[in-house]
Image 1 (cartoon, rainbow, N blue to C red):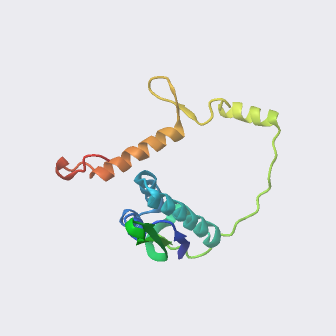
Image 2 (cartoon, one colour; image 1 turned 90 degrees about the vertical axis):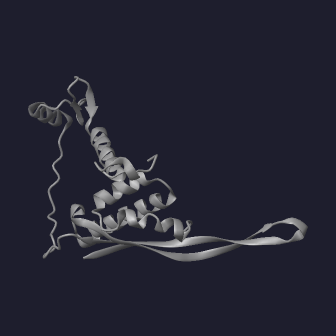
Length: 189
């Protein structure tokens, strides 16, 4: 099932916005978000927000799992044009155009689901602070150390930061061409 998100009249030229299209077409949404995260520029930022909106639409409206989505395509059309003039010598003016873009992101399911999931209402169980502390002690979780892990050197490392660093390294390797020869690489990334 396809789900779309649309952004009208983004203040970026269509030519600049289309440069992002080849980065994310056909990728799973996790990889596409990672690509846009490290891509830099206004077009990547706008497309990143729009892709997150399309994912949220698919999850909330069509009850699709986020891991089961991929970017089908990104469409960039020309929007309104602002016609302006810049004054030059002898009282004349040179015209120029400020262009806008319409962006559309379409995401689809990788493996189509046959039946919709029904959400069951769960009873909300409230815990007191004492019950929470005893439960965490039984599980061996220290409240101060929650979300942290020890590395080989004995230092505490935030798990989220280490995963983000690992994803950054993978994306950098993919941008550089992986383990290929260094013959046709850009000088800076």
